[in-house]
Image 1: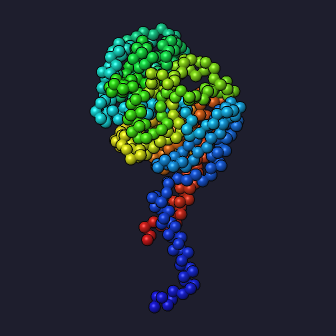
Image 2 (image 1 turned 135 degrees about the horizontal axis):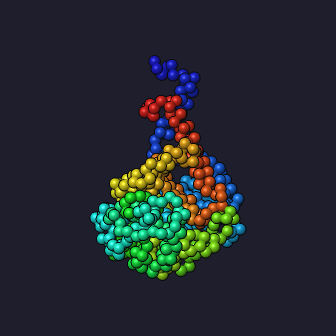
Image 3 (image 1 turned 90 degrees about the vertical axis):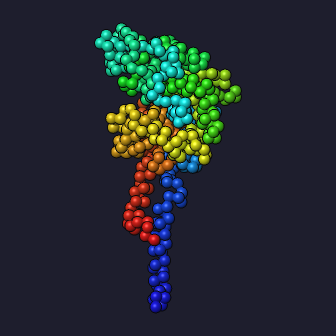
Length: 450
């Protein structure tokens, strides 16, 4: 009886509907493909091109990779007036400065997992030279790191710290270390005089740090500085290996990551230093990159100083590979590096927890909902950046990572807007597509229809 009424007219009516439901069903299966897809590459390319062509950046190279390592977006634009001959791509070596910090921190967490270190150990266990460190205070007894008015006189006294500095203070930037950019003239001058980057090795580095005052009593307040650099020395002394070897053996060689290192090979040359601090994009003059005064880290083959907070170079391909281990619960290429517990610890709130923009994990900023509200990005992105404009982020919800590679300390006014414009446009595409999928599925109820 049923077959008799299933005539040609019904057949041609039901078949398209069944096919439509099948498409919906398949679209709900995340195993069918990546969670995201760039809908309008030309729009994103145009934003990058405009900021380079208008003289804000010497170049911009942006790369996004999904969880499996497939490139979902990549684009480069070069200012040929400033860089007429170089080819810049995913294999170009870039100075990443503070993007070194999260690499060092993962090494520290690996050592903690194996029992070689504990965050609650005193730093003097590994660096006894710090036993005589003092804190700089003003006449009222306030540590200089707590004073908001930087136009103070330099009449300070040194007192013994009222707490024991631990590895936890180092990893949270609460140990009292700093850069030559505090704005306190006498402190900055003292820091510059030590010529930190000219240290012959980590022992020499510690001797120079030992002659500088702390700006805070350890554990009292967040103050961004060379804390992770000191943490790298702790890793060296705990293992007997320098930081270069630790990165190579525990991270790069073990996980097959090509594109993270400290020293250049004989035939490799880095791109110039650029600045737009006086509104004109140009090659930087000595002293304009002032984080260490007029000095920079060294990258030559024979270099024996490895600055865990500032000294690495990386390729876009290599750094995105490193970032992907955060999407794989601490694994990459089917090899374990960290446990999920360590990943959770790195990305959990530790400092700056009252910010409307998010909070700080272990030198990993986790964004709040403000970025989404103003259309600049997304909530719960894990991100960081470097002194010469490099940036990275990890989107654990959509399972992809991204890097922005450039080499400029200070873009001309308006240049910083590129990061918000690009990421805002990127996420607007995601939101539009995700809303479309949501509405589509909602209209036909649930994927379990069949």
